[in-house]
Length: 230
Image 1: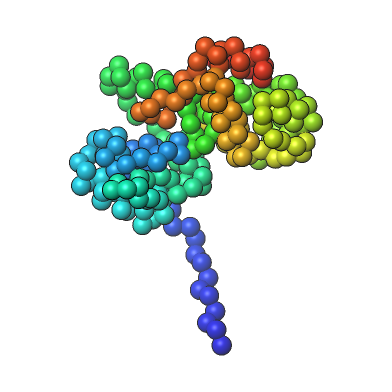
Image 2: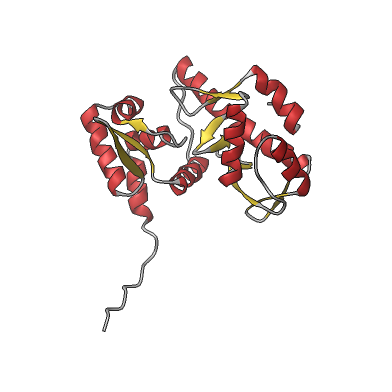
């Protein structure tokens, strides 16, 4: 006879809390929250710790299933283990107190992240929320339950942008931690972000998760999607 599986107990939140409680590990996770793959040296600089300390933290995060490591030549690159980890970070950020801003550089970076950023693989921040609002106001998405539903009008408008969507398709929403309102996530959110990057409406900040609105975006977002650009 095969052994009966042991019943699972309550979720072990303490283990997750212990991983996030170390400031350097938290900074590493936030640096990876936009879905990028980064080398340990860059993550060490982001966390403000020595390379050996960063390696220890990355080993802990990898063992816990929070990050994955991929070898590229002589170097190892680290990325979040999946969107579920990004969702955890976004949920924790919604209830976490803001860190104090102690320099102009920190203030500029904080403003940029709040305005527009990658949330794993989709557009977040004030701009991301403005896009979600516009898609609903123009009847392209219907809100309900835990997400959005693509309408017939929405499918046609998205097709004009090169985004494949069918009426009735579900699009997940993500509650934005800075705006406390939803932006579009899931597969549609990923395609929307890919689209506006290709169109040049936003550009990536090489050193952070921030996205920068371009002159083309100031025209394209309102003209093509009806977005009131914040």
